[in-house]
Length: 366
Image (cartoon, rainbow, N blue to C red):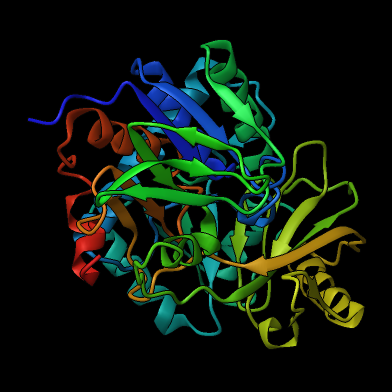
């Protein structure tokens, strides 16, 4: 029997990497967290971070997401005054009544808290929101500002004795005799460990390719626009045909959608460009949803959104390289806390937790 690891290195300073490092350190594993740049400077820093399991998906994925939301409720209960974690529900509508009706029917059938509203009911119940079609209200949903959450977890991680190393550059997993042995940082220095966790967002497949593992990838480009503070009564996450938005700590909104994705230019160095006219159009669409509230961009960021080829999370130990665990998923916000806990379980016990077993990388032969 392989002895339980005494040391681990986690690669990736987003919510999933930080959460996993936090959980490992709490479990008694001496853990180093390495991030290429600064914490939250990748996908976690440009996520709408809507906490939900709305719509239709596999039963196993729905269960994992609902447990993920539960962990956020536990964190929320510890301090309900946190401005960066809120449970004020979500509103969704499409271009017609049929889609809303089907969505509500499905959600009701699986016990997900769901309510069908017509546009007049939306206006009456949610001041400041202008719905253009029948909507679905999910009162149990929420949102989190991932940079704030990451700072919170990183603080607890280092206070517990964990090592956070930022600015590590392009890192590579060290593999010896078919087993992960640590990580080599961009400056050539190494951090040796009994276990390695790769949680590098959309860069995860490239990191794995560095030691011969091919993980199918469907990560698209995306962008998030953050607005200047604005006076609005809206506290609910809104998902509409031309704009998705949620409140920001301190005022303003985070806004995104996918209709302008083809207009994002990805440069050879990985940075992205987007013509300002598309940012303006997105904010005009969001402002219309907010009953005509004018919105001004404070900043925007673009990059790859991590999505595995089949849309389902990839969670667990590689078959090709023992001791190397992978975290790669689109739903990093909703799964942010629970996945760290469950991956730490797999690292420390050598057995995949039943909740993540359906999402093993072995389904891709990895």
